Image (cartoon, rainbow, N blue to C red; front, side):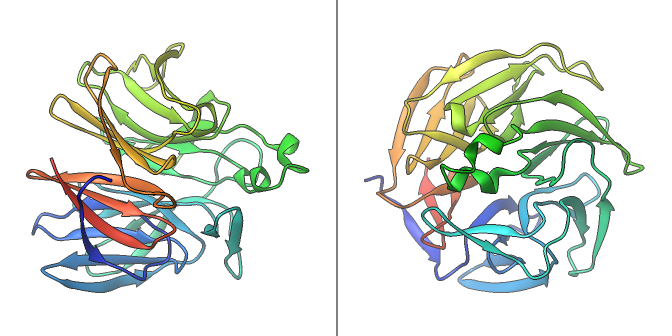
Length: 282
């Protein structure tokens, strides 16, 4: 098992870690619908949101931007918790004083919308994944009704358009150093690359394929290294810019690493089902 340090425990399916300007780490507590901030051994709650806050990024405006999936969270292997009441998925904006607002509520495609993860373009637009009705995948008898997912673009005015239809649970995403867009497809155990055209995408191609036990989740480039969490697979993969896997960090059975961020020489990782925030020296 890869050596790591546990900083916070007893969380409810953490996701979306983000390094804040003051060195704190903000992250989502999906099961409890909270945004939390950790620094120097202290973890505090920034705010509670309706629905289910999922992926999160720090925006160019200094606020936290949230993919809210509408109110579902894994609470055990193949068990889903529903918020009361559920809402349709949306994007939200949270300032660092804890005030929040809905940003984009009317999303295209078949409902329910379940925004999962997001990134900002150089122009300030938001690209985000919507795996849609992924809750049906927890039951073999309902899995055939899965909608497949989509890749969406939100403008600064909150208008959302569809960039591409997808299959197999589109999840984490990031820009490659060459300017193309990488998107993980969890159920297909691979990452695809889209040419990024400024406000549209070109045809995708497979960029990397993992073993069938590794489901790519959140990801981030740090220099020339791409770190990809495998929530199903209990590992974090490190890849180089030409898609070669250079390291595989095993975090133990049931660890479900969901997402990551880099601060100096430390990789911060959220572990979903164990409810932990950890670091790995890199």
